[in-house]
Length: 183
Image (cartoon, rainbow, N blue to C red):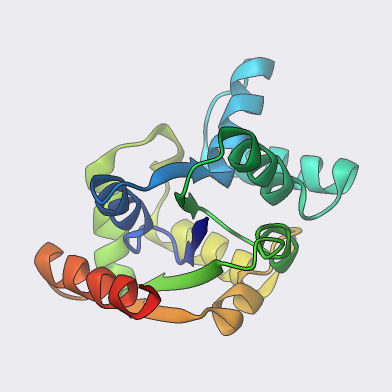
């Protein structure tokens, strides 16, 4: 079983890479979807702040790696050969997936102005924030300020790094290069 984990800045292209990997035969999982399920269960509106708050609540109650643990348990249950896991936000989540010896972490980034433009275009309910709020929330998550996330550690420990500052075709080419290295 090969598990590729995706971590990166907001709207850097993680979802696009996930979709591309699905087209290559990978099964997709997301730590953020685990939080969305909890929001839905509690009938809480899906906003960026609610995702952060409920995610932190779950981490406080069950441990910082809880979302990675839930996803990894589902992966083992499903027994798929090729897996991609999106939205890894702290090292404890990553470490849950590293229980599989064939786990590789990919960090994705893109220029902040481009990323903000993308969230405005995709129109998720959690994306309706100002540029300054977008920037501040991201800085907090990267450094771990005011949240149980510290994405900076994930970024530093990534096996591969992709800077998504060009076309969709170029992004796919970069993913293909990683897949070639892993085959």
